[in-house]
Image 1 (cartoon, one colour):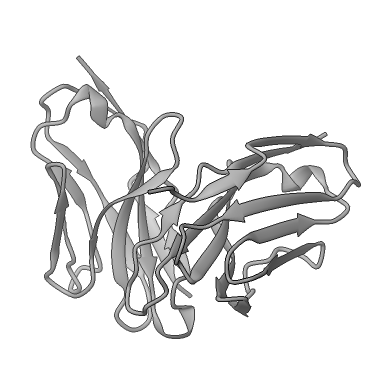
Image 2 (cartoon, each protein chain N blue to C red):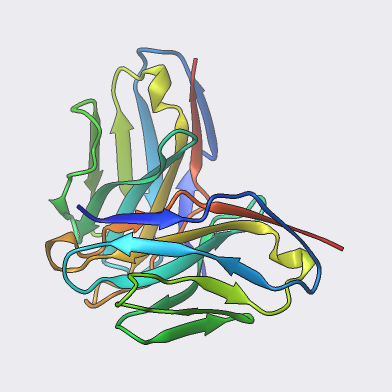
Length: 114
Length: 115
C-alpha cells in the first residue's frame, strides 16, 4: 500500500537556522507529493506541492524536490523564523483509483526560538 | 472568499450516543473529503465524495460511520453508538474536482470527545 514516513520530531531550532524535515514515501505508480502545515490554532493548509519527478515546489522560502530515485520529498528552508513554528505534514496522492485520497505522514512539530 | 467551514467546532458526547458532524465546502468545489486526526493514528482518510457520490469509502473505520452529501454541497458525517476510540478531530476538505493532483482546502475541524 501507499505510505509516507517523516522524520520524527519535535524539531527545535533557533531563528535563522537551516531547516530540513525528511520525508520518504512508498507508492505504486507516480504519486503527487505535498507538504501541508498546521499553525497553532489553525487548520491544515497547503505549503507546497510537486506533481512529477524532479519538480521543485516552493513557497514562503520553503522548498522540496521530488526525487523519484530516492523516493523522497524533503522540506528545506534556509533561515527559519519564529512564525514558522507549526506542525508539518508530508503527504501523497497516488492518483488512479486512489485519486484524491491523501496519505499523510505522522507530522513533525517544529519550534523556532528567538 | 469563504473557506471550508465545519460545525460544531467542539462536541462532547457520551459513549453510545449518535453524533452528526457537518461540513460546508468552498462554493463550487465538487470534491469533498473527510479525514480523522487522532494522537494514535495521525491523519487518516475516511471518505471522498465527487458530487453526491462516494466512490471511495475505504477509510470508514466501521459500519457505525456513514456520510452523505446533498445537492453537491453540504456533507454530514454520522457516527452511531459512539465509542471512546472515536475521540479525534474530524477534518473536512474540498477541492475543485476538475481532475489531476488537486489542492485540498481544509476546514478547522470538529473536535469530538466521547466520554
